[in-house]
Image (cartoon, rainbow, N blue to C red; front, side, top):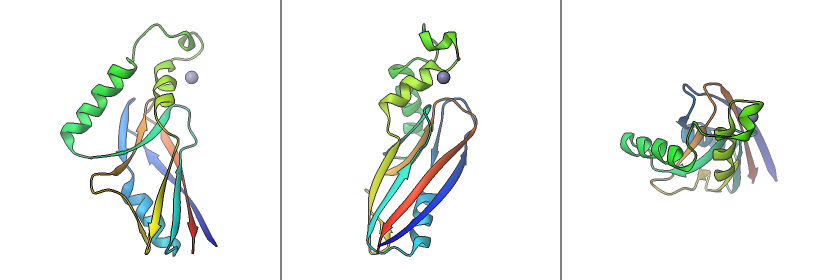
Length: 136
Ligand code: ZN
């Protein structure tokens, strides 16, 4: 079995931000040389998450509205007594820290409207994304 890992660094631009990382993950898959296997995308953070869905400007606004409906940015949160990011931790519990996609014939397999997003809930900052490609 062939295993290749890379770490991406993604810069976010505002406190709550989403960044489409599909191209960067697909590049790692292409460069890995793995033809058939899986790719694991892991986010080692407690205030950011991953999701796979459509990318277009209007739905980006809908995602932002969803985040606010799920966990309002300002609220009466206990964690804010020691830090000022309770909403970011809480939103993160509703999202995932990893995704796994099949790799078939050298390509990452996903739906037409399934773009992979990093959602930062406590930016702006640099976020690390670990990409591990396994197969042969
Ligand atoms: Zn905190």
